[in-house]
Length: 431
Ligand code: UD1
Image (cartoon, rainbow, N blue to C red; front, top):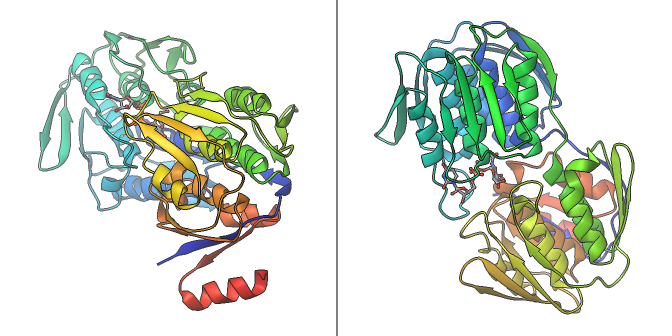
């Protein structure tokens, strides 16, 4: 079993290049199903979730060629199956995008009920409501969602709540529908705009992505395209917090600073120096930081996927901080792990954490309970005294490309270890 071992104490200093956004790459890969022509997708992050989805699309019968570590050519003209239920796809959340694409193109889809990180209830009722409004019948059978329609017809869809997944999924399904679909109360995250841009580059007619209302005029056919995925705002934010936690100085390169504004503003507010450039952000962790209040919100608010990393940053800040999680109902499970490292965190009612800043964190053996919590615990280890071992790193590998390598390049002491011998070797090397 692979684990990370981290020795804390070294400030992270230097430059780091950010990979493509996982949460944009996944629906963009699924969108390639909507055309019989070849789609070339570049700047894909080389992470487990993306690779699992590529394999799943290949299993449907698509012809996929990897022309580089971050580039694939996909041709879906020979798809022979509309059923995606392999063992790996079952465990990921974004498998639901295959529903929207297969339904949109073939008017039928069978996909395992989506898994993914356990952050509390993760309903998909809004996706199903949207598919039904477009004219599909949707049911569940033996752990699979089965959707089918004679034809899909554009409708007015008002979402009961803002959902990233539902917004994108209905966009995928409605692109080839008859007539116009108007979606209201939609999510506005940068990856929504990225997927709309990609679909438009294939000949779709989507307007309003990035606002509360998206209008889709259905087209008969989409054509091939070459598209490059936007940089990962959450990976960037994680390295920005790494600078704060380790009192380091990191130039985070290949980013769109506008997408990072909520994170930038908070880091500045707690006392970091933050400089913005055209496609880079530099964060300097200037000694003792101050506590603050944070509430996760839909974009452009503070992203829930940055909540654990920011809570770790606040664990050693001056005074009392409050972190309110308003998107998911159980996203503080990692607080117990952080408490093992000496943090003083009380979680009230499941979604409010009160953090009393402590002087320093102490290394411990902890579990990466989900993707972002796992990355946050690595940051905690890098800022702590002594050694930290992070178990279950497969969660982190779902969404961070070359995480230990990038941290090592910045001067962090981290390694992947398999057994006690590897741990001893690392301790000897870093003593
Ligand atoms: C996506 C991201 C995830 C991120 C989240 C919020 C992917 C693969 N995952 O997840 O990293 O944390 O956006 O930015 O892109 N909900 C419903 N009914 C629905 C849909 C959602 O009740 O039909 C609820 C969920 O239970 C959750 C909240 O809405 O409490 C947000 O969910 P949503 O925005 O859909 O997030 P995901 O697509 O699951």
